[in-house]
Image (cartoon, rainbow, N blue to C red):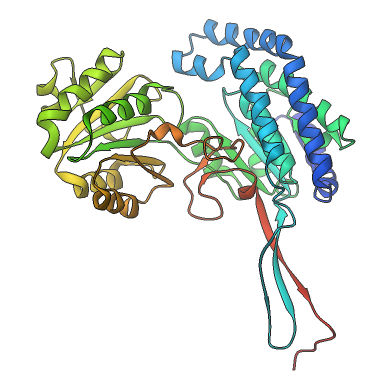
Length: 421
């Protein structure tokens, strides 16, 4: 551990705790004012953000980063506008803090309420995607949590430019700038200290990045973690699927953006419709530039299909590659997903309502879809404004993590002098 990192990180932690106490009491109007001002600053500073992003892209290209990683890092005028719009969407959401989640009155007259409260201080460690800076900052602010952001070194200039806009928003609403802090050092020791040396400051950690980062966070963290290890997502085309719909859904699920966690990585086709559906499905993907690795039947359906290995069924490619297999109906598809999947997002294409319900009920993933692309696995598409990530955990938060999922609760009990006998 670098001796210079510890005091820097501890100073961030202490400031975050103090800011969290103030932010927890901030009225909705001030939080929304800060978010609106931040969105305006992002638009006003778009040229500076793009220039900062060019520095990050140039460095990544010099390091010969993959096309998928470059796509996750790249900002454009349209993506910056989407970031600003996302911040505004978060501002428009109902304030989750102070909500009475449930209440009841006991026979002795006590009124018991379960009330939503912030988690406290959230640490977010992420790679590549600079938009996480704005999304995470906005979500934490709206949910009353202070946040310490640790971006990857590959996005440090872009993230710093976006962070300045968030701080400008806080200033406009007279909220402490320490509500949203960006770790100022690229030293890797800062991550280790966040994981195990800041338990007195950080209440929960959220990793956003590749498998190695998430595994490290889940292994070393000394506070609770919200996150997912990987998104090995599936599209199952059932015997009762419309061919045109199946082709469109599979193509979008894989190729719209290949580097996101909701991208489909495996295509499963019902044997009962393989004669009519398998070939066209594979052709649409292959003609779009997707590499297909398939079982024997997939290889026979199109000579361009490469043989799949056992490892392919487990793989999150995050690239223009998909595994393809023929299965014996919906139950075999469910079994395949249970064995190889990562409990992230799965879709079924079928016109059979009973088959769809069987799939939706029995597949134990955070998100299951009927006749829709897996790329809808996104907090913005769910109407949450934005997300910090997709959680595959079964405790606390599951699926898109938005403002409501960044809260805990406490019990408020009101009495009139009751004594326990």
